Length: 329
Image 1: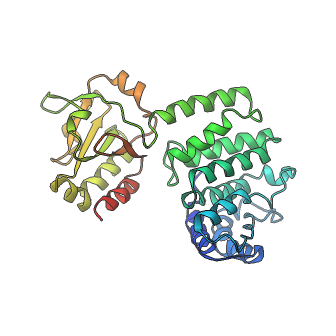
Image 2: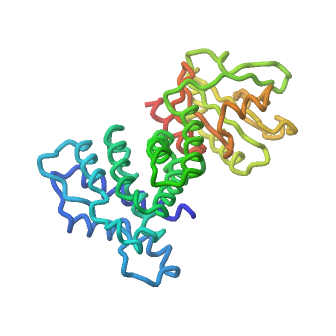
C-alpha cells in the first residue's frame, strides 16, 4: 500500500469546506463534486491496474438538513451518514482495496472539522456496519494504522488513531490475535499521545556533559527529535528544520529550544553538523529510551509545551513547522 490518495485527499478537503459552509447540499451535487475533486487523481493512478469500471471510487456525500447550520454540526452529520450509500453486503465493493482506501481517506478528511465526540460516534457507526465482514475489518485496521498511526503519512494523527484503536481492539469482528496486536498498539499510542507529559530522560552532549530533558525549564517550547545519522529521512528533517528562519527566530527570541538526540551509540555528534544553537547528545540509557518512546520510525519529532506536555508528535518536519508558525502569530 502506498499513499496514492494524498493529492486526492487534499482536493476532497476543498469539497468538504464547501459543504460545511453551505446551508444544504444535495446528493447529486455532492456526487458531481466528488467526481471533480476526488475520483480523478485515483483513476489516473489506477487506470492501468483497474479494468472494471463498475465501481465508482467515491461514495456520494449525504444531504445535510437545512436546520444544521454550524460547521461542526454539519460535519458530524456527514460523518455519521458517510457510509449510508454503501451496501456492506456487497463483497465486491467491500473487498476492493482502491475503493475502500479512497473512501476511508475521504472519511477521515472530515475529522478535523468535527468534535471528538462526533468522531467517536462516526467511527463506531462505521465499524459496526463493517463488523460482519472479517476481511473488511482487518483492512480497516490496516488503513487506520497506515494513514493515522506512526509512520510517514501526511494524515498521521495520534488522537484519531487512538480513537480507532479503542474501538477495534475490543471488537469481536476481528480475530483475537489482531485484537491483541491492536491493544498493544493502543497502549503504546496512549503513552505519547498529545496532552500527556513526555517522560524525562538523560543525555550526554558532545562535551561529555550530562543533561536531562526537564532541565530545559518551563518557559520555552521544545522541538525534540530522535534521529539516526544513517537515516536519510532524518538528514532531510534536520536540514529542513535547521534552515527554517522561523526556527531560528523563535530560538533567538528565547521562545524555543531544539533538542536532537542521536539514538545510534556508535555515531559521532559532529558528523551530522547540526545547528550550533541546538542541544544535541546521546541518551545515557538507550534501553530506557526505547521502553518509554515509540521509535520504530525515524525521525521521531515532538513539539512540547513549556510544561513538557506533548503538543504534537509527528515524523514530519513540515507539520512541526506549521505548528511553530502558529506560535509566531
